[in-house]
Length: 167
Image 1 (cartoon, rainbow, N blue to C red):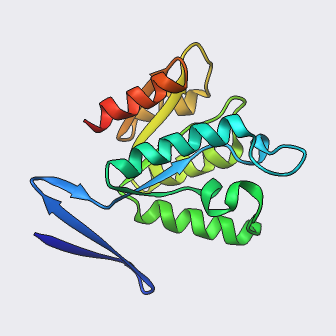
Image 2: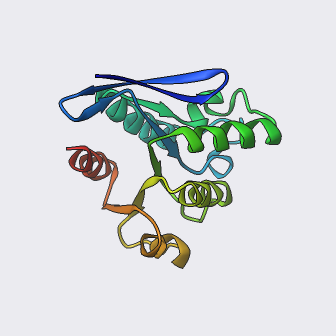
């Protein structure tokens, strides 16, 4: 079965339904951005590596991942505020799954994106580091939305938790 979903006049998504699983399912992966920039205005290598590993894991599972860090070349090709706001909002509106690292300290941009995903009634996966305090509206979002909380101890555990969720 092939399903075509029109998301706007310039872009379409092709979803292949094979045995109840969708290939090419769109995921928006959100994470802090500006607070991760180095003095050279690029994402620090530790966080870039982690985000890349999550993207690779999702892509290996046949997901199409929309991520601002990758789209903006890890800080080398920053979009204007209007451009990135429009791009992120449109991508969140059209995704089937929203996944986010809320950030510690809290990332204002990521929290706005979490709000957009919630308002658009998206399935949300929040990646939360164990033994870390998050905003009540983040930890309580599951009371009003379709939220899965994945708690992890380190990078390897985070990837394992995501893989377990996908299985």
